[in-house]
Image (cartoon, rainbow, N blue to C red; front, side):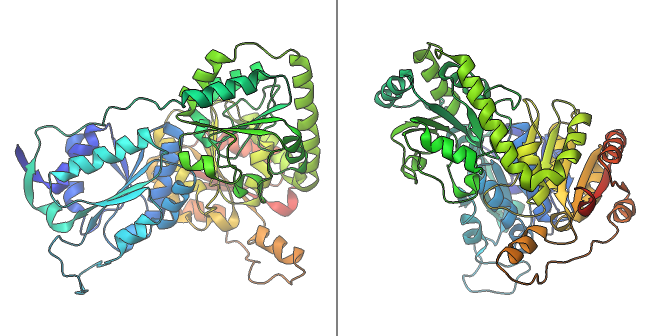
Length: 533
């Protein structure tokens, strides 16, 4: 055994799991961790708010395929992350949130100590897979190894580890080498269920594939299964681009349309891969599939969710799909008919959506014309994003669109873009937002300036909370507290050290985006929505 402080033990354990960057803000109680980061090759990226740090770590994890790491101080620093950690929990994103806690020998009753929050661990338990408070310096290795093992073995969700203040500062015995991830094999489905699924999928019929975020690593297998079955493919927001949206069988993100929901109800077999089949995917109560529902998911609890699986294939999506592909080898009898069906459904769904979404389509076409195939886009809970970009901005692998689904927080796009740019410094990264959500985390423009990489931020400005305004009108209410004229956002960007411009036409937007992708730091591009029709 050797001896070191808990702060050094944290840095050593993170480095042992390949961590080379983390997001957070130094504070009085976490300085002992910061003191050792550089020694272990870890770069701290300082955001301007802890919520921004957690969103940035989320974007880093989604774009880079590695867990995002957040380091905060006690009390308010940690609790500032809760909304962002809740978003990561909703979207199955692996985040490791590290924070100090009150000392081991701290009294149970409040004492008024700085940042004292006796319930901070309970708060984190509500938005994480688990919250673990260590009780010795030697346990830090084990706790961090447990988190990384969970990320690889189970449904990836945030984990919180709390290290008492006295353990961070005091030396204690640790093992000579940090613990690694426990050996695990990708989980395969139960043989009997695989046999039932194979028999079902070999039958001619009317199949469908619904692809969610849990299938992100299984794109080629999803594509191959769709081709073998002759099954049109529809994705959730988190599954967008898993199967190329230019593929003849792709329906894109259109689960929320009546066209696609009627089609699913008429299918005799629906294969749902890595998706909750949730209200946030369908934008209403999920319909019950008319035929047999085959669910492939690493989370066994999803098999009992509404609607429950008729055939439950519990396991890693890639492993299970590979097992299915070894059994289902005969191609569908009429691939042309399948492609024709997909074209008809896609055309009908787009016509249905365009009645409401047309005002964004020319601008999104302009964006697509400028972006590289592997560009990463982040989006916010803004009308131009969920009504516009999700259905109307096509994405093919390896491009990505990162969207805050489910929990539906505001302020995601800019800090998530910072995280994505950190994960992929050589790729184009663009944030899409609305004027309301952008101002939740606008201070992270300073972080983007600090990062020094081109990050265009396209803000569709409808003068307040447009979606809520529309809902009030739909209820027959007079709009209240939703009309919020924006400040001069380009000037604000320049004040932070970036750049900014207003674009009133798709051509102006294309030119501004081209320039922004060549300019170090953030460029805020405002599109006044009333001119976007």
